[in-house]
Image (cartoon, rainbow, N blue to C red):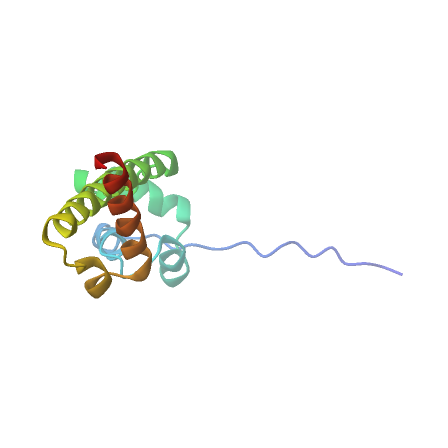
Length: 129
């Protein structure tokens, strides 16, 4: 019995002109298409697309394709900043509620945030006597 040895089909890619390269980069940059989808749609390798992005993309576009570590670091910094802003705003609301006697948080904020502000008010009352 003879077995035939079938090779894996090799992807054949076509040569891509400069204008099409820029079009692909632009579509990816504007979020209309992913790199994987562009590779399938235009029959070009992902490696080629990454190379084009590196070679032809503007500085702003290159920033969009930052490494995962850099992106995680940036997002962690943003989370810290937003948590600081949230705590500050809650402190201000708690102080205003103590001064005015009006429960603004319960009326206009989600329940979890209103509970946090209520806790801050209780802590302030304990500290101030």
